[in-house]
Length: 157
Ligand SMILES: CC(C)(COP(=O)(O)OP(=O)(O)OC[C@H]1O[C@@H](n2cnc3c(N)ncnc32)[C@H](O)[C@@H]1OP(=O)(O)O)[C@@H](O)C(=O)NCCC(=O)NCCS
Image 1 (cartoon, rainbow, N blue to C red):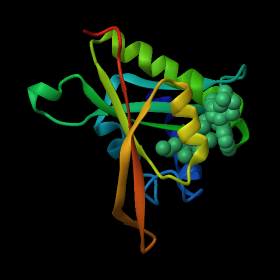
Image 2 (image 1 turned 90 degrees about the vertical axis):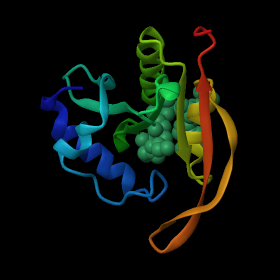
Image 3 (image 1 turned 30 degrees about the vertical axis):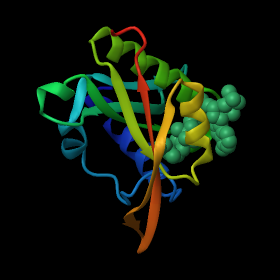
């Protein structure tokens, strides 16, 4: 993911937010804010033959504490026209490969229970459900649960 992908990445992000099932966020931020916390080596885009961005994945540190140096939180968003074609799985595999190569041992995220596509995608990529956080935040004025998921790398021991 490079600065040249900014417009496409943010448009795909906004389209995902507008499903109402992707995140507590409702508006994609500007590029500067978006990239600020994202780890440079662990943000990837998938493109088609014409180099158009089909989707993206990106990870951020969860904490500055040394004990959590190998724990990241990620997001994955696919263009509405490219969903259900394996792009999400390809991107998660790219994230798993880049993070494991860098010694990162855990990838985590939260998913609304209603987001069955994302739950299935992450299950397919080897994530497990830790548990469901109940009414953990408000989204459009409604309390929502979040399913907390993680993938602990089997190769980093
Ligand atoms: C969730 C999302 C990232 C999935 O990506 P994707 O590229 O469509 O998923 P894939 O095509 O790689 O499919 C991966 C698995 O999920 C399943 N899946 C995909 N869409 C599905 C849907 N709408 N309902 C049920 N399962 C679905 C696929 O069948 C596949 O499982 P299988 O191999 O067992 O058949 C994508 O739908 C998206 O961008 N949604 C909006 C943003 C969002 O919700 N992001 C996640 C925030 S937690």
